[in-house]
Structure formats: C-alpha cells, structure tokens
Length: 472
Image (cartoon, rainbow, N blue to C red; front, side, top):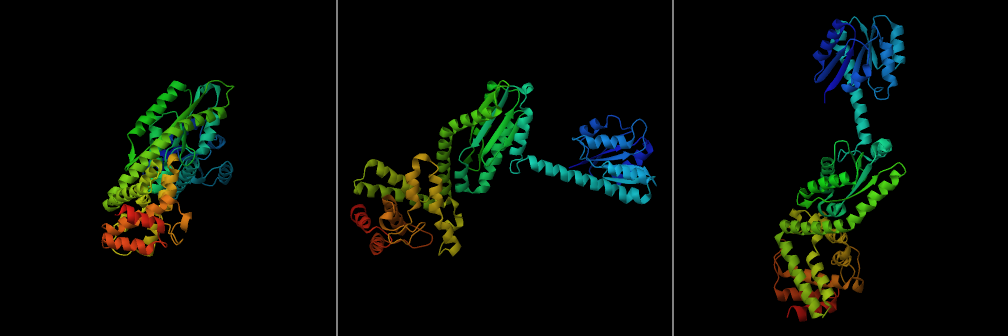
C-alpha cells in the first residue's frame, strides 16, 4: 500500500529538497505539494494523505493556523503533521507540539537530516497513520468477510435514518444450513460459504448500499432511497448470483426478506423487525430444502470417499427392511428402518479417508475419531425437522445390549428398538463383506458370532429373528 505525503511550503526550493530527501530513502510514496495553507482540508481529504510536512512561516496563512485547522477537523485530526521551524526557534517548536504536531525539524536542512532523520520521521508518521487506519478498519469490519460489522451497521443506520434518505429499505439475510455444513464438512468449509455469501451480497447490491455481517450467519443491507420494487431487484440479483455458486460440492443458500420505511413516523426498529419476519417466513421453507440437498451432497461425498462404505450402507438398509417385514412392522416403521439403515454411517463424512480405508488395526486416536461418527450423524440428520426420530436411531446404533457401547452407554431396552435392529444388520454385513482391516467371514461363521454375542452386544430376541427369518 502506498503512502501519500503532502508538503506545504511556500518555497519551491525547500519543497524540492524535502521531496528529493523522501524519494531517495522511501519507496512506494506519492508526494503532493502546495505552496500555501489555503483550502488545505480539501487537499488532505482528496488525496488520502497519510502524513503532512508543514512549514511554519508562510504568507496568507501560517503553519500554526493550518495545524490548528487540521487538528480541529474530526476527519483530519489523526493525520501526523511534521512542522519545519527555524534552526533555533524553540518557541515555535513548543507551540507546534502543543497544537498537536507529530514531530518537527529545523531549516536549513543538514546533510544528516536529508539522508536520515527527515525520511525516518516521515516513515514513522506514515506507519502511525497506517496503524490507526488498520485499527479503524478492524473496528468497523468483519474480519472473515471484509464486510461492515454490527457496530458500523448500527452507527450508519442512525446516520442514514433521515427524511432525505426516504424510502429506506433494510434487507435481512440468514444463511441456510450453516450448522449442517460445519458438522458435515468442517468449519473451514463453513467459513468459505460465509465468505462466498458475503461476496455475492456485495456484488448483488448497489454501490451506495451498506452491506454488513451482523453475526455468524446473519447479514443485512441498508439501502437508502430504495422502495419495495428496488428492494426486490436487489434480492433477485443476489439470489441469481448465489444460484450459480458452490463451495466445493456444497450449494450456497440464503433466505432474504425486506422492510421499507416510507415516512418519518415509522420507527426504523419496526422496519428491521418486518425485514426479519419476512426473512424467517421464507427460511421455514428454504432452509429445509437446503438441508435436504446438503445431506444428499454428504451422502455422495461419502460414496466418493469409500465405495465399500457406500455399498455397506445400502446392504444394511436392505437387511433392516427384511427384519421389519419379518416382524410384520407397520409400513411407516419399515420406512424408518430403511432410512436409518441407509444413513447410519453418514457421520463418517468427518472421518479421514485414510482412516476409513486403513488396513489393519486403528490407533487409539483413529478409533476415537471413528467413534464420533454416530454423534456427528445425529447432529446432521436432526437438522431436518421430519427426521428427528431417524437421527436418534443413528445416534444409538453402536450401543450394546450389556451397556458397554457408545456414545451414551445405554443397555437393554433403553436402546431404541430400531437402533438394535441396525446394530445387528450392521455387524452381520461387516462380517460377511469385504473390509480392508479384516478377512471375510462365511455366513455360518458370522451366524456363530451373532449367537456368541447375543445378550452382550446384541438384543438376543432380535438375533433369533434375524437368523431364523432373515438369513434362512
């Protein structure tokens, strides 16, 4: 980033000396020059000045007057000013410092000042201004997206909320499925989705609109002089942009709603509430659809991770269905069995691919990672409103009849009935199918294992039904 310097001196010779001293020692610097202190505020603002070199003795308007003007202007007061004084003018130095000067140097410039001290003072002044700018930026911007933050939004909303800006529109946005994305693909992926949404919100809005991130998955746009028709255009722009976006294999979705203020009597808080209510009304429908699509993406990703795991889930689902039919369960219960059987290992999306496909025994850390999959699967599936029961069956499918399983250590009939069925189907298929970490067992050997573990790992009554009615 370039530093911008303004030299204010009525002597062209002095300006040239100072200019050259800066250029000889400092790189990437823009230098502006003026020969008087008139209309200085405009020059400082127009050129985004980071530091100012100011001569004290000038006609029309002296350096003290200019310095005082700068320090009394809230938009300019932070700009470091380095004053030039006579070689023995201590009174001038004291006055300049009392008025807020950053530093000073004496004229005529010595060789040491030209080569070392003046460039160093300039550099220190620029560094100070850059640090201040960075602090101001961070205090008003969201670090992840680069959008404005809640603090800036609140201050800007108070500033914009005037009659001259009517109608004022607020557009509220809430990212769909962020928790599911975080649980399924990790927080790094979730952060990328947040950044992508922020970028599309900015691209889809207009130049004068204020786009801010209020919280984790919440965004807002302040649109001055904007009616409902224009608000709908902005929303359509954003939705069109997001429809084309994916982060990896994950779709990006946000629910948007708006509220408009048309007259002074309306409270801006009520407009904000209306925008929120409209947004949440849409979210009820849109977020469910998004979660369903994300779960499909998770399933497809897991299939790509491990063909063996994918085929295993389908076989477990088929076995669960046959158990349900053997038990003469109602069709809605059989459907739950089929769904839970297919999704029982969906939480393995968080397990490292190398661990899933590792031949041989897992390390203690790898085993702990694998054991998390039932809880992760529960968290993922429970985000879909009509799949809460399925999520519970997934959570408990590694519990054991004797209470030594995970994650909760449930035992006996504390374990959901459908989870007990999945446990048997899961174990049987794992025994008779290809696995990178074990040899395939024959059907007869697998049946013996089921019998041996009935009453410890498995529900003994369900084992009998599985062997006698499903495997026969």
